[in-house]
Length: 123
Length: 167
Image (cartoon, rainbow over all chains, first blue to last red; front, side, top):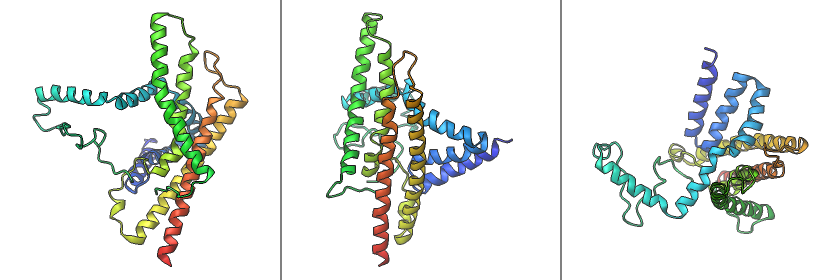
């Protein structure tokens, strides 16, 4: 049960700091910085922060798809994809049961597709 | 926390320029990837393997270089549903607390970024295909450094607002 204390501490810090309005990235860092030293010790925790999180993670091969998705959105291909999904879901039972029923986007001023989670951005 | 100065300083313009570099890299990467994949499919061995390493390492640019400017634009994702309900001066105090925590965390990130970059330069780190990665790792402390600067400026702006309300 030695995992329970860092887990609970990290969870409380994560949820608490997100609800207090700290940006989500910083909230994740807070919980990681609080939990890792308890779990692994101070030096390994900072080693993970330095080389794994900051140096190696952004260069992960799997993350190379992110620029491809951004380009896809710039080219307007996401509209085509969403129309395709809507057709598939309308044929099945998910949309009909109301579990997932996204707003239609025939008009230009409809909701943008990215606003799914309704997290508030500061503007 | 948004801050668009009427008379931008050199550092303000630096944040803006870094965002442009990061954004340009982000749009350039798919094209580079497409070219690499197509050439490797048509002519196996027609393009050196380090081209993929460059694509991976260039991800440091869009990840870190825009951090400062994105902070200034207020586009770091956050949940403000509960904080928005706090009235008046208490809201300012909560905002200042959030900014202080963000500043400390970004300072820790800056320290870690500088350390990672220095180690990379000292060890002359290279990828498996012998591409020198230490040149590109310089983007890490530069980007996080501008984030620290922007958060510092946000704290200054908030403090001024706090003092004006007090006075």
